[in-house]
Image 1 (cartoon, rainbow, N blue to C red):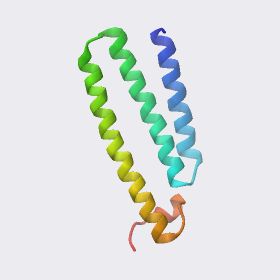
Image 2 (cartoon, helix red, strand yellow):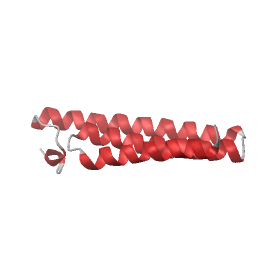
Image 3 (spheres, one colour):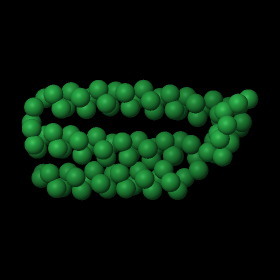
Length: 100
C-alpha cells in the first residue's frame, strides 16, 4: 500500500464519522461517529510515521493515544448510560443539561 492509499482510507473514515456525528441524535451513534473520526486521524498519523520515518517511537505514541481514547470513550458511554437510566431517553436533546 502506498501513502496515498492509506490517506484516502483515513479520509474516508473521517468523512463517514463526520456524517455520523452530525446526522444522528442518539448519543451512542454520535459517539460512534466521533470514534470513526478519531480512528481516521490515528490512521493518517500512523501512515505518516510509517512512510516518512519508520521508527517505533511514532507507533508507541499512537498506542498511548489509542489507550487514552479508549478511556475517554468508556467514560462517555458511562455518562450516556446514566442519562438513559435517569431520563429514559438516549437522545442528545435530553442530555443538554446534566442536572437531575
